[in-house]
Length: 314
Image (cartoon, rainbow, N blue to C red; front, side, top):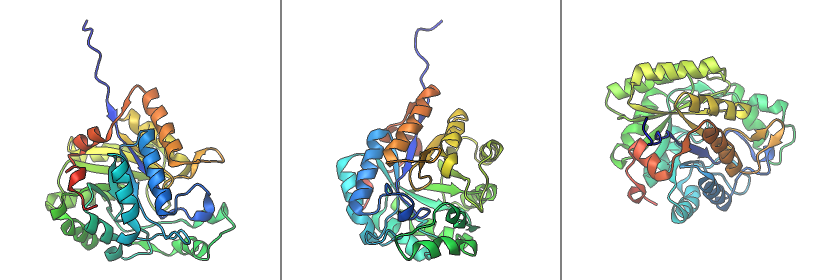
């Protein structure tokens, strides 16, 4: 029997620092200003996140802001402080045009950018059952309007994002909210517009997408295995209270995890997370408790075959 220890699998933690799902009135801990977003991203890195997924907000009222000027201050500060992999959204918010959503990625040429694989209903209106009082006049209509709003990501939109960024060397976090989105990725792979290894982020628990049942998670994994074999890196995010249970299932199935205040405001039943770092630490505890190790940014870059932090435009 060999005395050499078995090499343990490395698990990539992505932290989605802030986003377009929650509004400022839902949690006092949601990062809004550029300094708050930078502090939150650096804190997540220090807690164990190898990748940070970033949106920007208007500092005056917290509404989603996809202008490059809103991203630049925190991008430069995060990069100057640590070597975390920076992932810029092209999702923005469902109220934005694709042209608006694409601007930061096209300008800053990040190592990673998110890319949604299909148009969908994106129901945020059930949050009105929990949250009643709002500080800003845009928040309630934003949630109410989601019962008739389509999050538009057509085949032409996806092709536009892929071709616009083709020369930048940016890899994509392919966000798949349902099984059909995996087939859409397969279609674009066959066209040669996206190259392996695919970084597939499976999203569970958004009203309008696949549910959070363990069988849904297993079905997504099986389908991705069948379509892409060894040519992909799998990660999951569970919305709301589903965040850590689905993260644990992903790790058990050989996958990676995404946590953060974009996807869930909670750290336990009825308990708001006080920071993104707190959620990263909880995910790390799950990973290490299952006998795995948390990947460093350098290890994540190797797994995802990224171009490197010096090849970005910020």
